[in-house]
Length: 324
Ligand SMILES: NC(=O)c1ccc[n+]([C@@H]2O[C@H](COP(=O)([O-])OP(=O)(O)OC[C@H]3O[C@@H](n4cnc5c(N)ncnc54)[C@H](O)[C@@H]3O)[C@@H](O)[C@H]2O)c1
Image 1 (cartoon, protein in one colour):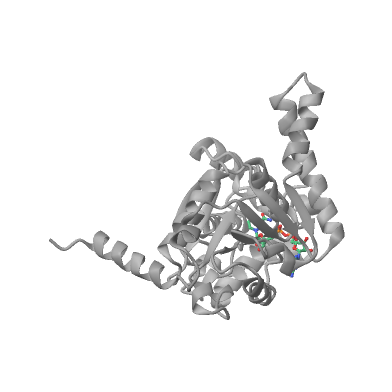
Image 2 (cartoon, rainbow, N blue to C red):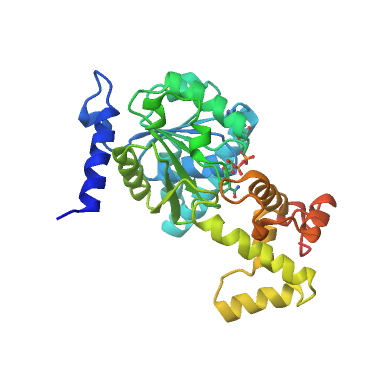
């Protein structure tokens, strides 16, 4: 009997086998990730580094800016101290040991090539600019071991596009690992499988996500993956309700929290994510997002444009739909 699943998996194995180059053992392709290099020491990168180190991985955090690395380390220590206080509430020495032990597994560096040289997994979390990410992966793939998983934490760029300039064998090792903010608290990681990604690489990425205490959701490389593809139309529709004067932000938020059981209302969520970020993503998709071009769900909103233009970007600027 024909089995689509069996056929798919034998093709996946065949693709995986083609991924080997001489000298790379099956073992090295399959073994668990231990050494992680995170590139970009901002909000997301430092969170990813913290969580990986907390789950016994050896981590190198890289940034072009040494001040960003200092801020990233301070963010990790602050966050770990909060965890330590809960874990060892009346033992200050144990709290310090907890933080020191985890931070002892994190090295920081501004030297990209050195930092990726021994990595089992490289996670990129730099600015959301296609060209910057493409140039970065060109450099990473030269210096990283031929068995390393290459991953991007992009929210809105196609993983296949970021990997476009790499060699075929490198493209087969590229996936998306989309973490959520704040990383230490958010349980989900979307594992984005490009058409070219080897099944074994995806499996290894999924195993890594579980090993750091997160829950993976595997999806295809399409705009917004799962969460943002559903959330952005929802947030834009809330803004359009406001534009049509159907209800105030407060009433819409109350309605969705109490009527639909959402933990935050859409306007609270917009302000938390940042209105400039939302505008950047929906404008990009509406202009040329694969399959989303001209989709009215992502059409520009006069209200959103006006808020962004006046610098009301949400929580980060103290004003958005609400004042903070
Ligand atoms: N902030 C979020 O809520 C969120 C959620 C999920 C995914 N993301 C994605 O994560 C990525 C990072 O976002 P963020 O909010 O942490 O940004 P951020 O601005 O806080 O940090 C980016 C860091 O990257 C560094 N950087 C820039 N170019 C670099 C390069 N070439 N090499 C090394 N370091 C470089 C910067 O110095 C900065 O420290 C983006 O792709 C974003 O779309 C963000």
